[in-house]
Length: 182
Image 1 (cartoon, rainbow, N blue to C red):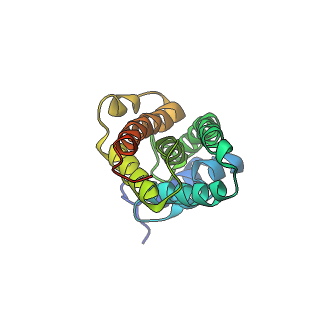
Image 2 (cartoon, helix red, strand yellow; image 1 turned 120 degrees about the vertical axis):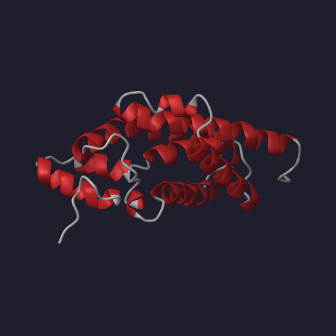
């Protein structure tokens, strides 16, 4: 017997069943972007998988960039994740019937990239950035939690941007005081 999509705790199953029930789907581009090309479909903890996928992509991509391009490209990618992520998250949330679907992880992509702005390309800073962003995203200190109340994709993405800014601030303090090395 299949689980009732409205009562199941597995949002992936709920998502698929609700789309079938409603007869609507998000555009393929929106689904690919919103799930960060499938990372949001991984369980448990799709947000953590989305952050980890972002970290790996940034680590590989940054290896091929000249040092003078690292910060501008990082900022540009974070802005792109926000600009494309908000409409993608809106489409997917509407199609799924969920306010903030767990499998939408483009918000984690944006926040993780923001936390890593200006961080050295070293395992210590990558690990610290990953932990910092995930901690602020989970704890949601003010005003992060309040930003979730914004409508649709804006609320889905902007709270993680704020968590990323908290992570960025703490990361820069750790770097300034030499706690991660250089």
